[in-house]
Length: 193
Image (tube, rainbow, N blue to C red; front, top):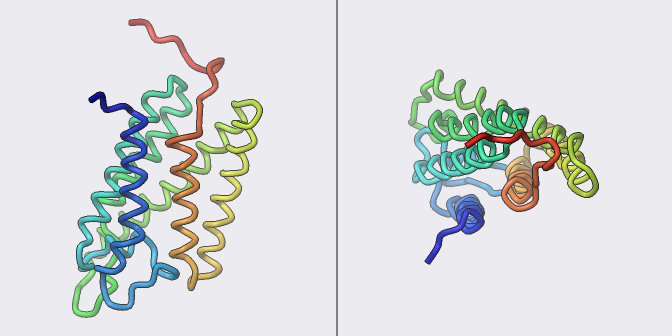
């Protein structure tokens, strides 16, 4: 049986949806899918945090693969920044949210830097795709960049809903990146074998 790239993307996407939906049942008491983010699932001291952090790493590696395969320098640079920063959010964990666990502050700060870089680089990638593409690819890229920005703003303005808003943003973003985005062929460089 041949294992295709599309199959890999589907599996990684399903892993993310399952982990972000069901790991909360096995995380710290009081975790709410509405108000707690996926980073909270992977936070220092959180039960089973390794599962969410491994999922971030898997998403990051898959995103890096997509970026490198694109044959458009801007996609390769910005997409690699997105994938690498996402991967590093799984390496550097969010500060502890449970009593009795001391946060390693530097690790929490690094997590915040990479989580922010992930968001910014995704918006740049989606906007860039929109401006470089034509037709539906153009409009979906621009709309997604605006939606990701507005959802991020909504997370900051409505903390009781930041968990569900983040999941919505991730599902939209990875659906687009893994299954919809097609780099415009007229912008690709020709590789010499």
